[in-house]
Image 1 (spheres, rainbow, N blue to C red):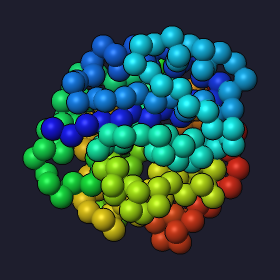
Image 2: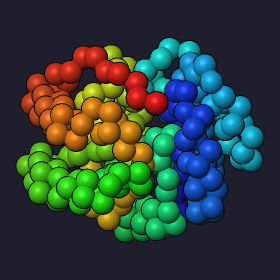
Image 3: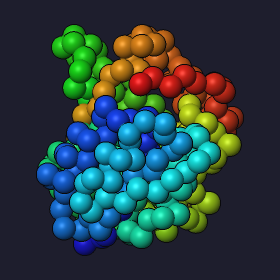
Image 4: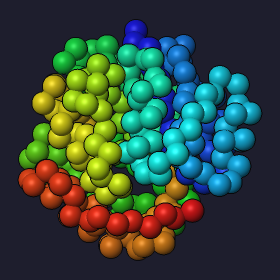
Length: 238
C-alpha cells in the first residue's frame, strides 16, 4: 500500500476550501499520510479555514501562480503518491479506493487521472460535458497516450521529482498537459472516466462552455505538439 500526500493549491478559496477538506476527511483511507493546502498569496480567510481542520498542513507560496503552488506542495510532501486536487473539488470514497486499486494492480502506472463532474451546473450542461469527455477527450487521449486533469490526478512522487516537478514558467493553461506529457517519459499515464471528482463549474459559467472547451483543447494540442501553451494569460474566477 502506497502512502499518499494530497496537495491542494488555494488562492482566495474561502468559499470552497472547507467543503473540499470535509470530503477528504470523510472518505480518506489509512494510507493518506498528509493533506497539504498551499496558500498561494491569498488575501482572504483561506489559510485560517484550512488550518482549523485536524491533520491539514498549510504552507505558504508567495509567488502567485498555479504551478508555483503545485511545486511548493510537492517540495513539502512526503508520500509515495502525490494526489493533486483543486480547492473547489469534492472527492468520494470510490475515488480513494480506485486510486489504491489502480496503483497496486498496475506496477508500471506512473500517473492516474480522470474527468471533472460539476455539482453546480444545470443538468443539460452536465450531460454535454459527459459527452465531451467521452467523444472528444478520450479519443485525444487515445492518440497521444497521455492526458491529465490538473485538479484530479495522482502521480508517483519519485517520477515527478525525476522530471523536475512542475514547469513554473506556465501560469495556468497547458500546465496539466505539460505534466502529463513529461510524466509519460517515465511510465504509463492513465486517464480513466471512472476516476472522477465533483468540482465547481464557475469557470464554465463565467467564460462559457464552448469558449472554455476551445481554450483547453487549443492548449492541449499546442502543448502536445509544440511543447508550449498557446494561451499566456488567464483570469481568476472566484
